[in-house]
Length: 249
Image 1 (cartoon, one colour):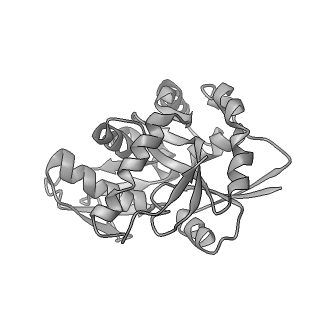
Image 2: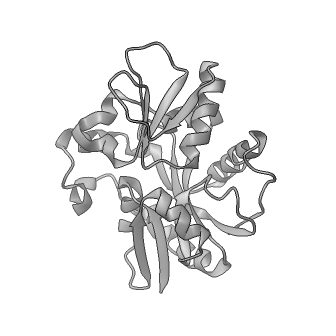
């Protein structure tokens, strides 16, 4: 059996809904717990935010399955206050290194604005927010936000590969890749049939369905090449001493 640890949001849940197999056991968790499990090597395989691997060498990464975005749908949204001061953004929710690093890059390159990221600050209605995770989809909040994934994909001029399958050994990657064809053929558009979405409003479901073509579970060279470029960003920012070795399978 493959023991898998995964980020927990609507997109990762849907991906695994297409992989129903007795030889796979998935444990969903918040990103801070997932990063600790990854560091301690507690599982065989991980589906985690793609920049969480910057400090680890000699990893194996699936080049066939992951989760990439290039439209309005996103795990993370930006909400601007009435203030015109964009120098500070408060990061809340189930955030990861991706949001901490790439949001700064987007604001610098797209808006010519240097921003300070403030993590887990007590927020009020006058704060600029980057909200991460499923809380965006309660009370239709995401409709009023800017998609961080869309901004990143526009900056990259390619789909933004947010979640990758990673292992410290080759075999789990080979096993999960066997599901690539099944995932490629899976019809995700009718998500109303998925029990995980019972809690979401009809309006949220309609938006998800209408925008579903902007999400990719089956990867191509385009997503992998874009990831190879943006994973250099922590090195350029001095957050990593060197580029770690990855083996794509």
